Amino acid sequence: MSNTNYDPQRNEEIKGRCPIADSELCEWLGKNGCYQCYISSLKSSAQKEEALEHWKVTLSYLPDNIDDLHMSDECQFCKDEPPEKAEYYATFEMAHPEPYAEKGMILGLGKKVRTPIGSLLSIQASVGKECKKAMKMTDALQIGTFLGFLVLAFVLLMIPQIGQAMANWMAFMPYIFIALMLLAGYFLGKNLAAAHLKKIKKRVKVNLTEIPLIKQMLNRGWFFFQTGSDGMPKIFFHKTKIYDRLKRPCECAEEEEDEMLDNINI
Image 1 (cartoon, one colour):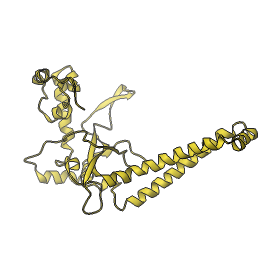
Image 2 (tube, helix red, strand yellow):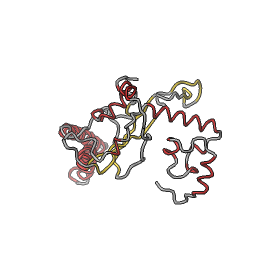
Image 3 (spheres, rainbow, N blue to C red):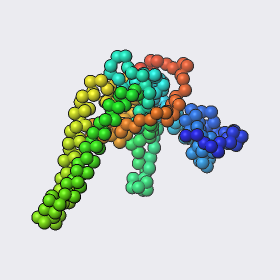
Image 4 (cartoon, rainbow, N blue to C red):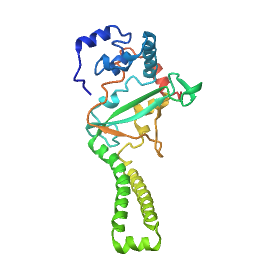
């Protein structure tokens, strides 16, 4: 999101005093100006430098070519060859236990214990129009069926021969009827969504672990954040990127170390 109050001179003044200026963390956080970067609100240079070191640890667990996920012109979710042209971006959250972080045991208070999450990132991947449509249809079927049964329940209760008859039989019967209709809508919607997923799995990588770069991340200790019953995170779709890139292009990467990380579960 652009900043309409952006002041280049003021931005350069703040940047000149910041110990993380021109770093990868600076590029990640400073899109709208230094005075909108949360690092600038930290009181000491030591805290800012610590944030930079933490970011370096986070990046060290990412594949060097992680940005190929969203910079590619081809859909990352297609199973068909050749893949369709990418027109959108799919985003989902992944977490990693490093770097080390701790907080109080009870609501942030009390004895400090290690937190299970040290890094949390929104990952974006290029996606084509047809794959996006197929994946969104899954949610549409489940939510649409649920809402449809809810509307149907109220419509039926508005018919005197039905609604009044239920109320005369038992005062709470209309409420029980609505609850039963909601349950029916939920389970039918869930089954329709599952059937749709089974159908599109032949041409769409609905299981994110099938995407090579995501598999590399999982092998490096990353895991999906806030997953559903299928073990997959919630996916959101955008027309524009939420970030330009995570890592700067690596000119002298040691491929042997990279391959070792990709095959070790941390």
